Image (tube, rainbow, N blue to C red; front, side, top):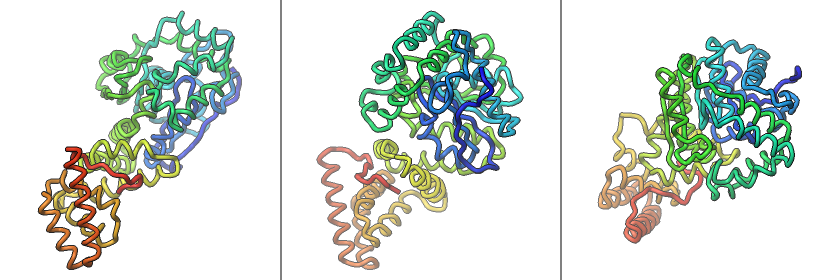
Length: 402
């Protein structure tokens, strides 16, 4: 090992509690992009690259087969020390999660809370990892690329821009660095030390994860006192990438509960996501989350926290009343796409079609007959679509919903 540091990125307020995010084998720190905007509102977030991955030199780990998880943990602690962080929260995916478990077991005074995503206390028999290390040293990481769709995420997701970018990260990974990380996993077995972990711990598993299936997560959750377990349907090994709408709120809620110094933005986001799903439906919110880009991520976080986490969660009005007010405002401003979405939401919130018609009539007096005329046309179209499909899920054609 050298005196160099892991390549890393810092995001979030400089005075916020520190949170370190560890990646999975074959990915760069970009694997955390879906969670970054939300997590960085309440934390000073440090994302790091594994040796040979992203911007980290491969020489940070020995190449003779002797690399261990303790070596990686030392590199992470070196980063924390460089930023003068005596204590920090930590979340890691796969091998990144293994580093988090090791730190929590061996440096308990430094880890304030822990989240382990699609990871394990023991991944596979050493021979499996030694064989993979040998293959990659000989043929490069391209030898692994074809098998990642279906393991990291679904084949459909692999065709998305984010899926393609992650696969390119794998192809760009230095073969020596990747192989050394395989050596780490060959030597890694923390099963006998799990019971010593005292940090508040969240364990996340993808039910469709063939690399670390749910029994691996249950083993951790059962052994770590007080650990919480979240199993996600429709998620493979990179659950946070494929199912950010479920993973991000879980991480926010966990780190909010375990950090007394955190601002309440995280809790508002978690509460807002719950209400947003209840009003607009999972289909709509999942679609909005899937279409989120780095450019739109802050806006999606803003409307979840502010519109849904503060306004819609208030107890001063019931949701029927809020829907009636929302319909009137959208009619007044001519926002037809949003109006269609909130007509469906109004039905979910308990308004009948007749009551929606009354709201539109009332709007004709105070918003204008032409506006109400357009609103009636929009409502009729929504009702016709519902009748044709027998579907009352409040979906939308709008990418930037509120």
